[in-house]
Length: 182
Ligand code: SF4
Image 1 (cartoon, rainbow, N blue to C red):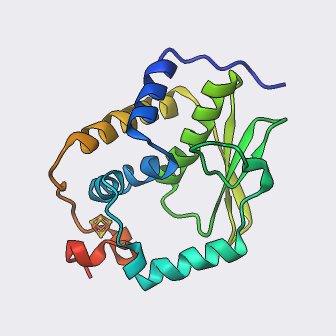
Image 2 (image 1 turned 45 degrees about the vertical axis):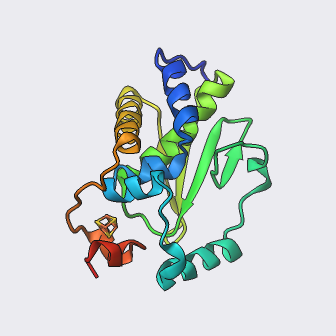
């Protein structure tokens, strides 16, 4: 039996998510690189020119088809949903960028909690080592998701591409040529 979910920011958070058309990857990107998040928010996409990403996308499409349990989840794209236990699953190839991934999965759990009134949890499954970890919607994560949504709104309203330092992620980012970090 799952607990009831109550959060006094639910209405404001949902309104912002709807208005800006936010989804899980926004909440991952904003915790990795603000420039990447800005590009994604403004629908600038270089993935088709980046062979690394194109290969990864094809692999994902072929090997990790989404479970039928996710059909009908408008705007959300988790890999699987356990409706009876209120758990939302996300598969990742490796265990990297844990904080950013937890915010992506936390976003799914939060939107399902707001929509159903039940307290959902997230579960990240790491495919390469077959391990998993639980993502709980505690106060720290709720505050973090709220702050993410405010940052995303600021980035959405900004017309200037934000500054961004070179980070480890750049080597595998589809925007690397644009940023000059290749
Ligand atoms: S290449 Fe690096 S700095 Fe540029 S958008 Fe990607 S992660 Fe951010």
